Image 1: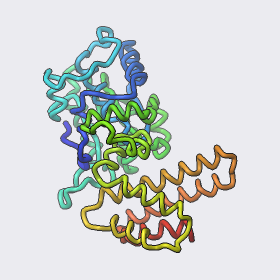
Image 2 (image 1 turned 180 degrees about the vertical axis):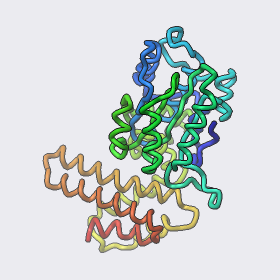
Image 3 (image 1 turned 90 degrees about the horizontal axis):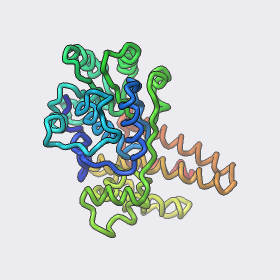
Image 4 (image 1 turned 90 degrees about the vertical axis):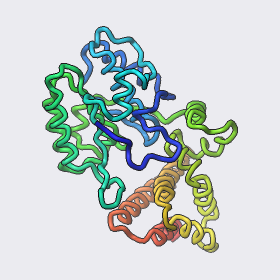
Amino acid sequence: MNGEQPGLLEGAIPPERNTVLYGHDSAQEFLATAYRSGRMHHAILIEGAEGIGKATLAYRFAHHVLTHPDPLDAPDHIADPDLDDPVGRQISSGASHHVLHLARPVDEKTGKAKSVITVDEVRRAGKFFGQTSGTGNWRVAIIDPADDLNRNAANAILKILEEPPKRSLFLVLSHTPGRLLPTIRSRCLSLKLQALSPPDLDRALAHLGAAPGETDAIIRLSEGSVARALLLRNYGGVDIAEAFVDILERGNLNDREPIYKLAETLSARDRDVAYDFFTGFAVDRVQQMAREAGAAGDLAEADRLARMSATLAEHFATAAAYNLDRKQTVLHVFSIFFG
């Protein structure tokens, strides 16, 4: 019931086709045990930073459930999916009638994903559960991520969660669960995933084709996220990140050349992915600086930086909402820092 996700990063494997998962053994053990008990919650909120494996975990669990429809006969672990068996083949090809992937739909005019998951997408869930209700098998809906639900879509999902169909399972993915409706969170069992450790991230990147010794700088900057690592590796992210950090360390606007060079780079045509990487990296970097200041006991500086990260996030959100000029958006970032 789902095709390849729009916006898939270069070098990434679509979650429904990924046969390995690194760094989340305890989460997999928890899901396998909960399912085998026969008393599993009907909705699991899988929380964690973007790009750490939430969607891959969801598809692995869907494969596990559909391969072992009787919980009491299910194994106590989640095995790597076999994409050549009937269940794996159907899921990986998007042809399974028992798995629904709800994500931001593609705008037919632009060919790009829309900014939100609409209520029309959620209505597909009603049809999905209605069409498969007589089969007796499990039906798994993966909401990826639920952060993108607009208000009407969120309310529509909430109604289904309040009265879930029999043998239904909702895997609700969220990068920032605080953005979800509290009523949605309250109807889900929370499963928090941690960022990948450097060894696990190294293994994940090797699985995606990275050569030994290639990933040292990438791992240092990626904060345990495979998605961020791919942005750093394949979209010039290392240069962007290092240029941004270098400008911050200079501490003033006197030398404008590197600032304008970075703004020109990010505002060039066909640099959408690089620009999106920068907006996320800039906010995260300031948040990290705030944490470091707090750990060092400088609470005033930690508070200043925390407020600055919120200002940056609002600045980028406003620029995106009103399609503001990217060069000016980037230049204003440094006015926020040094103005």
